Length: 331
Image 1 (cartoon, rainbow, N blue to C red):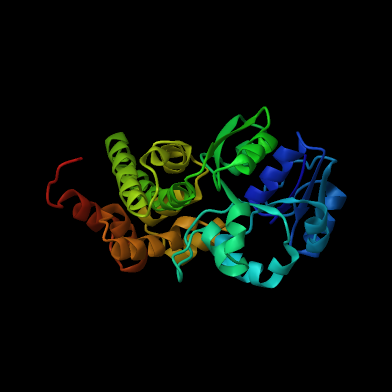
Image 2: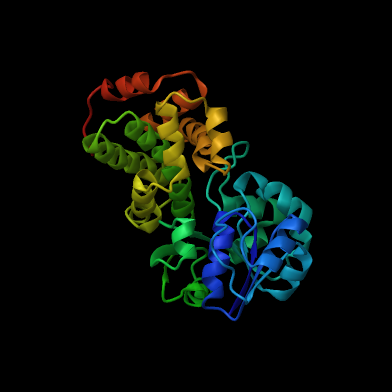
């Protein structure tokens, strides 16, 4: 098995390192030629996970065309906000490839998920060749081969099952799930709830609060997801509950960190500058709020996170807003 990874951020690099341990060859495309040269010469990443050695069969290059020509299976690991421009610029290179989408989120202007952006730019025919990987998986743990379990979604059929078998390793277990709407929505929305969890942690509200946020956060994700055509079982699985628990509790979670820093009184621009990496939940909050209005689905936690990020609501005001809502049935 061989694969080409497009995007040398922390997630793309981690997957390239992990798959290189099991595959014959992995090619990693990075946009910056100097980064490619440094990584090739030193055998260490140039920007992210810099202490992780690169296996000998992991080839780093800034020549995108060469990677696309060599591999039929391509993993797209660039940040979601760059998807549309990237596909408009380079989509002509993609022919009969299988695309494995490795980014999570919702495009703010269009409210499209990653797989929908691909089809919007490249055409509806790409629906049968577009897949996505999601689930509880921190990049650093994947890079050092900690056992990880994720879900591969895409069109139901033989190719989904073939890719599941081909991309799995003894330390990277894949389940298949054809509910691409549910998987992609859950992977995006959990980052919004994680910001709320970080705010709660930063304010030292305790375990009761965290348990309530995660549970009611999953309820929000499930309500919106089912309204949009996702399956309830998906939200109880790896892409839903699994990823939500990890992102809301794990110290490596960037979105959790954003929430903690907000609770400490830091301004959002300063937080993002210090973070130095993408925190998908910040932009996803905007998109999720728009989806809430469009679909007529109430998302109270998302609404509060939006207020704190963009409307001057303080964390304490946000808590009061959630706790003093009219009482309702849980189910």
